[in-house]
Length: 258
Image (cartoon, rainbow, N blue to C red; front, side):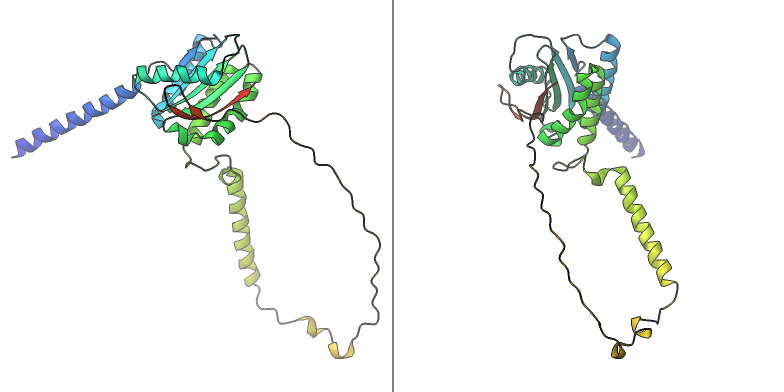
């Protein structure tokens, strides 16, 4: 009986190991996540970005992909991105992805979330990521912008869908300030109540029966009203929004010029 139990446990362990290896291999089958057709990155930068993308891809079960182009033709970057992803998804058997597409010739960039990332990286979060990476792109730091895309998008995806990850309530300084205020209030309340009861009131020093108002004066001086024209906001902001690829894959997204 003991031998049977031992063999059963060994067999179960091997099955679990093979299942784990199979699951890792299935996800690790994607061996390329950076498609730098515009040659914006050095070999070392590509290697570093591939490593960062692989780490966060495994964390979320969502691949982080990068596609660059230097085509001077003013093609629709959303269609270009969609056609690429339809092909990539079919070849790799993966539907969950975050894809950053850039055409350096026309200075267009578009960030999209597919599969589960359509929810965890919705349109609002996409534009928050773009807010962070566009200045880096404008400076020509493409490697930094791509790395920032992975780390920031990955952090946002950890929050519950629908929540603004940049809300002040999630800032460390705000939480520290609230803790200090609460602590100070509690200490102040304890100090206030530790000094004994105060028995003197205003009536102790004021005789209402033998006091009266001797005069009253209300004088209106002036009133000044000024008007100011509120300037209208123009330019900037995100664009495009989400949509669907030619292959019918829906996505969240946002695009900018940089």
